[in-house]
Image 1: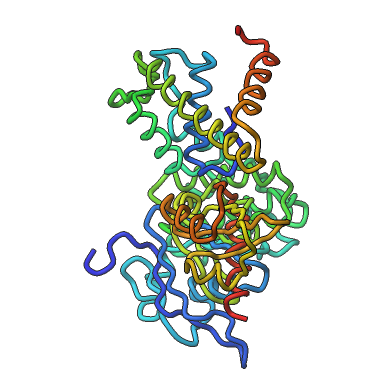
Image 2: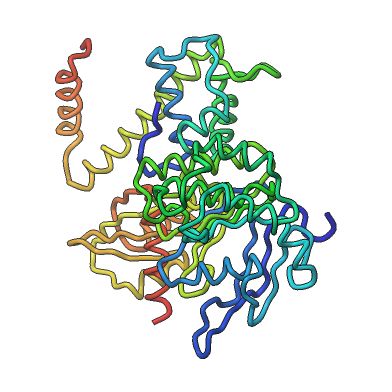
Length: 306
Length: 125
């Protein structure tokens, strides 16, 4: 517990280049121990590339990954032993039976626990005699979760695990992920392109956009610090003038005379000063959903960068 | 007791749903409320979020923890529950009043909307 107590995963300047394309750009991820961390980004944002570097499947072009107190590049075996990984698509051979897959894993994963595996098999109601190809998507996802958990890892990393699952299968899957996190002091990182799917299960979020981390923090803090402010300026006021009033405006929308600002680091005082500076007699403050907060931050980035 | 889908932070939605359940008599003073674990698995909500909601309700005096047993609706929950109900009503009215001002409606016109809404609700005058 010397330098970074409390972090399960930490990356410093993590980057990955594919030819000319910088897929992941200087990521400083900080995933607290015990957190359920939602790693959110649109398709192609760099989530899978990042995850593959976290689990040591892909070497970074620059930067480093720390798993608890172990530098991944320095001691990959020790670091990887702490991590369970659920890939975005099942990796088991379709012609194999479930029990053959388990026997195979037992043979290649040193810390594999046959007791834990058979316990999870019963809990997830998976028939060991089934062929992989005959499993439903929901059961396939649970089998992937079992394969990741059977060596009782301290960190569980899931890459878009609920993609393609129906709402009931998704609910069941999340229940098992929550149970895995409640049953032992485990840290979970779960990626998704849909914030709506995973926000309730998470307590921390990181937003990835074009390979860069544009927000990282506690889920509830994001909601209480990001608000929409609706103003009715008495005379027209352009976007540039508004943006000069506050660096925290992440998005501006207009409808008729009304101007709606998305504000980061919200305080009532900041709202009041924007109201008076824009000569708006009234204002209204609205909460916004996480999905909208994410979209507004992304749109705001694009406006600022262009 | 599903938490609503509003845009409030999730811990507030969870706390509100418990306040409403107590107000509606689903849980009476002295009753146990579900554990953090049970609530988390049932609602598929992060356990830390449930914990934060419970801590908020405990600070408000609505629930109390009995060590080693769990959380219970406090015997004196009526006062704090009433105070937090008044707080939500105040927020709703303030929102309505701002809407009224923005639309240029008078105080009298706004009062009459309120009076009519109260009559339509069928509650005692």
